[in-house]
Image (cartoon, rainbow, N blue to C red; front, side):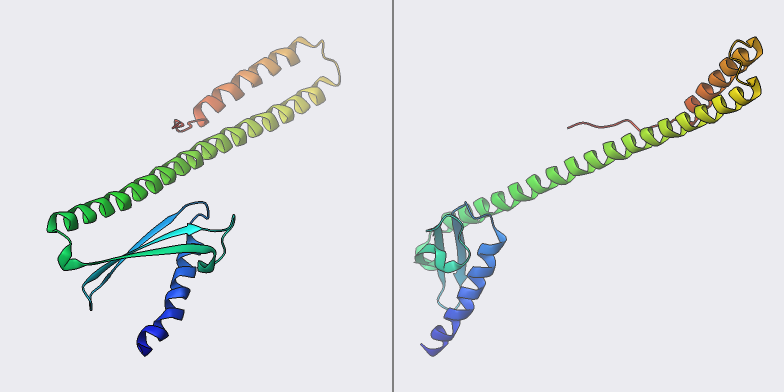
Length: 171
């Protein structure tokens, strides 16, 4: 009895840690297997307040069953359902991770495109500044217009060669 009394605060700390790790709106079902007494213990937690902060904010209902009273097929079914729940959670997290990875790749591709565009604009501005200086502020000079067109075509050709962006993925 003394050991059970000493375990109550430890159990409450464990429940508090568990409940803080999970979303507050959900009801919770915990299961444990007591090896010493060969019992399966199921605890159902239902919140009593809108935003529960500790185990005291939940109604707890314990269901206990001796392991020898549970049919082996029910043992198998319980383990199968538990495995399905864990697998479902892992799949959901993997999908979220993949979606975040795709978003990161798309953002990186967009950033590279923006950097290339910014570089092209800077090159064009410098080119135009050089042409205007060469012109001596006379925009009607045919040589300057030809030089401007040639520079523009050279810039476009250079950008097409440099710009090799990865294909973006959407989910």
